[in-house]
Length: 255
Image 1 (cartoon, helix red, strand yellow):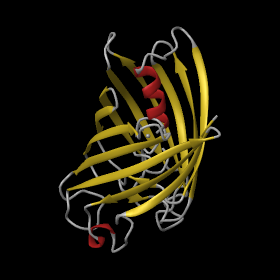
Image 2 (cartoon, rainbow, N blue to C red):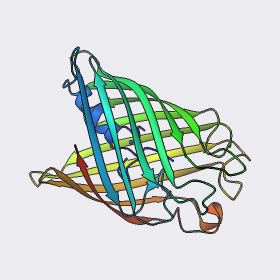
Image 3 (cartoon, one colour):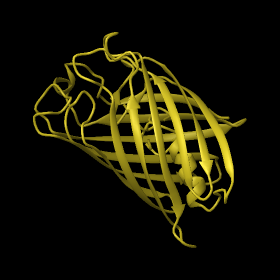
């Protein structure tokens, strides 16, 4: 599932916490800081290898490494569309082995201030998913930013595996560590599932995910290590440790 991206979470957490809503985030950061194209057009890409694809704190790759990548197209002023994909493993071939995300939105700074806004839509597609319930789902998102702080909300009318309404509220903060070239990224998110309809194996209807990441860029390649986790127990996620705290290593390159 998202974010996952070098986009927003956009698309999170990604979230990276993997590599992913960081594309969305890179693009959003460029637009919010006033670097957007005016009446122009630009295509960019990204590729990454991560030790464990974590989305909103939960492993999407059965704790195995995953190859990820995507493309973005930007139109002035502030409009963007893109796609992002990753290898996934949900414990059976009938659930598919690939995630493809398609997104579009608009992001801009607010006047001449340090404030910015990003609104958009993302569709999560799992080709080859032949399970009893459909994995594909859509989300609408909006986020606001001030300097290195961002707060956002995602909403799905029918979340992964047809589990009804879902809300995701998150906060991100990025900080350069003196003159070391290392960036510290902090993330916390609150997942609100429809009571009794969530994709968890227990009756939990909400959980918190979090991550702390350090990233260093060398020769135009991003090297990051993140500590990612949730407040879920193993019984909440099918008696696995897929939601336990863990270290995630990622190598990413913008193209």
